[in-house]
Length: 217
Image (cartoon, rainbow, N blue to C red; front, side, top):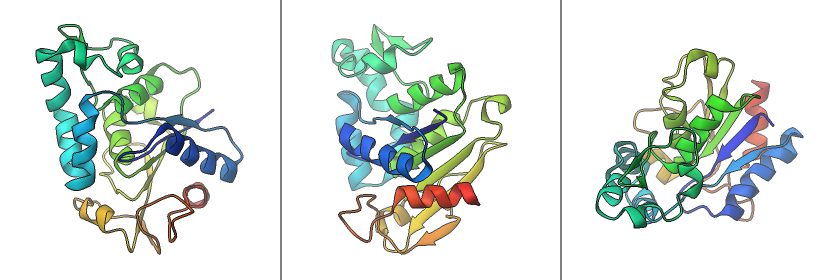
């Protein structure tokens, strides 16, 4: 398995599996789905991501404002939903409560997998704020760990800041939320879609087709 995905704001485990399955079918390969939204700290941040934009979400996550505060003031609460991220190698804690090292639980998990897996990921796909979480996860990896890596973003272009990574970024013409969160990061291709990747809600971004297009580029 050399492909991993992270979904966006408010996504459930089912939504994460659906995105990974769509890409798996399109490429004919197994795909690992990393489910976002672990723990109490994410409740407010998930809402902020939906209401005010992923840029604010990313700032608060990267700075660790909410999770660090919980770890300091209520470490027992900070542990809720953090068993997976706390199990990563060299997991950081404050007063016994886990805190983020790379912006979010999903970023921490992906960063650890990129460091310690015997078979490195060759393709990462992020939808919405999942793209930002991928960006945070790979930012401090070594060039050897990111060599030959492709990153596909859907609905949220990110900075092409990691050397050796090939970025393929898609944004919908009708995606007001994604356009709000461009932050001067332009997509490589505009699509006639809106923000959702749910094929039951047209004109949705068809993740599998767009990822297959990126691989062929």
